[in-house]
Length: 344
Image (tube, rainbow, N blue to C red):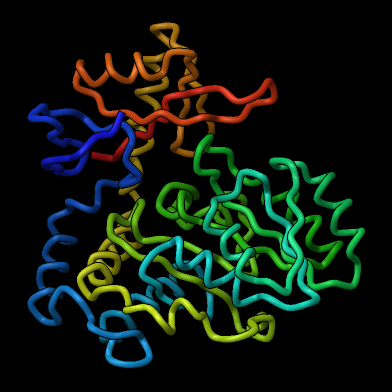
């Protein structure tokens, strides 16, 4: 089913004239409708307009962009942060910029298409795909390419099924084999870790990733993406991020909204508690009703069903907006409802 939202405010929306509760939004913390975030966006629009009118290297950079980049760098403890118009572009740009004839990318089979598209643009590099979270297969592939510039890339939280990357085991392997690690924190920022700093905080492995790609469009409730890294890995970047150079920059409105959301998350450790309580409430209610909900440590939950379209339709009639996905399990691919709670 395709849904067109006629109105939306946090977890509530109007679709086809019907008010529904959203159980499928990536706006995890409901910050897209937070009064302070809306105020920051409005003030930025009044000051800079709704578009920048240029790429970052021309007229597309405002003081808010600089503040946001500094805030992100401080939040995740990195030296450099580049801002891009979307998370998709950030993933593409990062992988493309690491291209060389000695580079081998190792991509988990369930990684996001944006990473794969970036690797395909890196035409001098090689691509090795490995089975989902199969670290033995990954190790064997890396050992077969000793002496190369080996780069492992995977999401911290997998988009469809909510699996969390085994960063603890990956980090042990990284110390022995010496590869570079890219983490896509799209579904981890604001959701994983005691203070929402993502999978590194979740595993208490600060600085484990060489490159972090993230987005402002999920828990931070805005739009845009970023690439973060430290000085010691700058030499691996072949060039500036092409997408950044030749695309109109992230709007000051989105940058201001993302900055305010990040400040709220950084200053209020209780901000994630309603999200975690909402998730537990869904788990408890499903368990009480005998509903086979698949729940992991991330905020993404799956409800397998052979009749997902029918179930989705019935839930919509009851006032709940969900989405369907095809999830991969050991037994094969199965249609599921993908359920995501919100803090609001």
